[in-house]
Amino acid sequence: MKILNGIEVSKSLKQEIKSKVDALKLTGKRAPHLAAILVGSDGASMTYVNAKAKDCEEVGFDSTVLRLEATISEEDLLKEVIKINQNTEIDGLIVQLPLPKHINEKKVTETISYKKDVDGFHPMNVGLMFKGIKTFLPATPFGIIKMLAHYKIETAGKHCVIIGRSDIVGKPMSALMLQQNATVTVCHSRTPDVSYFTKQADIIIAAVGIPEYLTGDMIKEGAVVVDVGITRVEDASTKSGYKLKGDVHFESVAPKCSWITPVPGGVGPMTRVGLLLNTLQAIEA
Ligand code: GUN
Image (cartoon, rainbow, N blue to C red; front, side, top):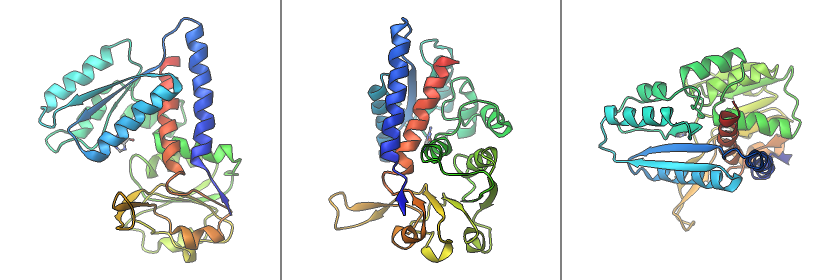
């Protein structure tokens, strides 16, 4: 069993991005600029947005975080989005989700200019992605594709089983793996016997959000296993009081795999680099 090391791969991709930014600056152009809107003070959302700003700094991008009160009206939030859409000094815009209940996320997502939608959530970008036309790809599936490519994992003709059908991971992942010439099966909460499929899989991408869902008895020898899950589970033995658990029961799955992502240090850092790659693409377009 070998480890798909997201920390190492993301480091090398970030180096490449930084070199491209340095080259841009040498030609007199400004750096790529990512704007993030954070509404309210949800702890996880604040952590994610701060991490995204730190990543930008690391590769030489500019970043702006717009922090808005949780009580902001939908109308006022849309006005802020439109202002950034019109700002020619900003290349990419993300609105961190989830948003407070009184705000319609779909409306916000669809108001972001699809040319600045570096999350790849706008219906226009979803459509372009499904057709295989170059556009912004949702960061997690994009990062996974980059990781598989880095380790030269064969996808053509392989059976890829994706567990989970979310708009941001499962569905786009299925489109991207099809484009990589895999045979794709998508399992979800209404699939009667998920293990029937996972036992046949050459590549498994687990994105269910249930800690340690995929166990060793559910996979075949030599499978490649990618774990998208990241759930905080209470653990009194740690300083923080919790532990991060993936969707894969690592102890039973790892010995049977050819390749596996750890949690943390697997898909997470690749997701972060996916957003940087999109932002670089936004300024190059
Ligand atoms: N909340 C959780 N994941 C994401 C993401 O990828 N983008 C945004 N905008 N919000 C999120």
